[in-house]
Length: 186
Image (cartoon, rainbow, N blue to C red; front, side, top):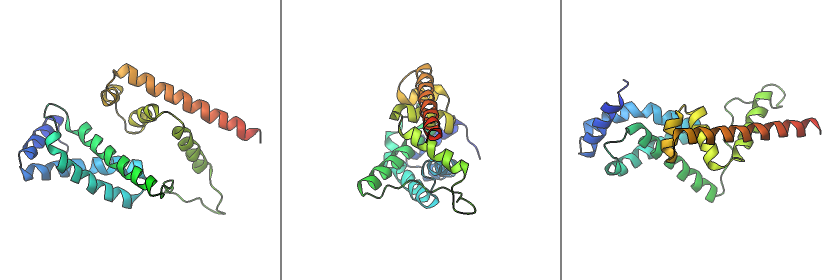
C-alpha cells in the first residue's frame, strides 16, 4: 500500500493521540522506506535491522515533536539519519569504525576488479568533501530528493541546494581526475 502524504499526516496525528492502529498502518507504510534508507547508508543487513528497530523506537519517543502541518516522510527520514549518525559516532568512539564491506567479493585470484577500485575511489573522494556538499550530493543523486526538498532540509532555497550539490560534484570530479593523473604517473 502506498499512502498519500496527507494520509500519512493524518495517521501520524492519530498516532500522536494514542491510536495504536494508526501506528500499525504507519509502520507498514514506512518500514520499506526506512529499511531502504538505512540499508543504503550502512551496506550491512544486520546493522540495518538494528537501526530500523532503533528508528521506530525513536519515532515513538519523539512522536509528540512531530508538527502536523509538515509532511511525515522527511521527518521520518531525519529521524532515521539521526539514528544512523548516532550509531556511527558511537562506533567511532569505540574504535570499531570500519569501512562497510563490499557486497560483491572480487572474483578469481583475489585481485580487486575495476568496479571495486572505482567505488573505493569515489568513497574516498566523497569523504574529502565538506559535510554540506556530501549530504547534498547524497540526498539528490542517491536518495532522489528534489533540490527543493534538499533546500528545505538545509533551510535554504532549492537553487542554493542545487549550487551546493553542483560545487560538490565539481570538487569530486576534480579529485577523481587528479587521482587518475597521479595513478598514471606512478
